[in-house]
Picture: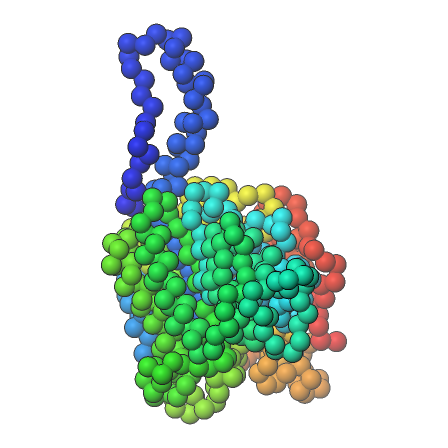
Length: 509
């Protein structure tokens, strides 16, 4: 990795000084020496850019499904050519908020009060103020931290005059000047520029850790993606001039609804507005990679490109399929579902110093794993009270096996249904999709099995349910799932507990 400039002053011991003087000097400057070592470790660390799209399906990225993807994605394709594709990466949930909570904390969101669905803003942050985030951890390691995009983990809006919390009234946006007391800059980020979620996209929120955040403008949603693109370029340009490494978190709000490609992108694809919007979303990555090249920091930067869940039905999945575009790349289901189309997502990593170009990993992993991975990357232990469900995938970047103390990966649907994946086996505690795809729970024929079990090595499209044929395997997977839920963590580590005792294992009676 490229070495950044070392501190200008160094402590040197000259051989002519007596032993007592050297001993006193070492004792008196111990704290300074420790800080110098810590800073040296931090400045040798890579920049980290984490781009997460909103509702981008596995099959929406050309290099991941070249036979069925009808959309050009040159940014993601370049990243894959120069880096590594993960083919078995899963979001922590099949919807927005829970996945983002897991990325930030290394913990499943259903361990909190959020047992299904998503948050809607105008409420205290879902991330407890005392819980360290991956951004907060990186700050302790000497990183500059910035977030640009959709937060969707709740924050409050305070009246600019009375400082009292504003109440949500339909989809009405908070007024310009509204203060945000618990936004991203109170959860580990130095700076933030973005919005809360799609229904309040008009309200642009920005600020710094030093000044706080507030609503700075109301802007047409069609301008949000260009705004975020420009912010990324400007932020990278600025941070690249500093000695400290940086962590840039880019949670985009696209191609989620409203599907609003800018005028210059309209008509670019053969698939209408959705295809155009995916292309414009991919262009954010194009611009990020271009900027890294421009400022000659590409070799020092770990870039991750992913999505928070599968494609939404709002994209008109059937109409896209009629034109030959399969949003989930052949996996069953889509956003909100327990089937893999709901949570098996694009995940592409480029780190020139470590990752072999054009490589691939087929190992099972989860977006919760970012926190443990960056800690491992920096040679640090994960802090106490963090990363209950996070495992480092750092070994995979060098083509090695992930060393995991986690029995399996837990999946969670929009309606709160659970599934458990261990090796090739996947157990679903639902009769149907557990989400929005037919058949939903209420539509499954009477007499159907209570749950579903699939061998994904033989049946990746989840068509052959062997739940009733493999009772011992069902019991084994269910026991592991129960263990991971009741013990407050799915990895080895200090005792932990859930924030609630209202976790319901079987949602369908």
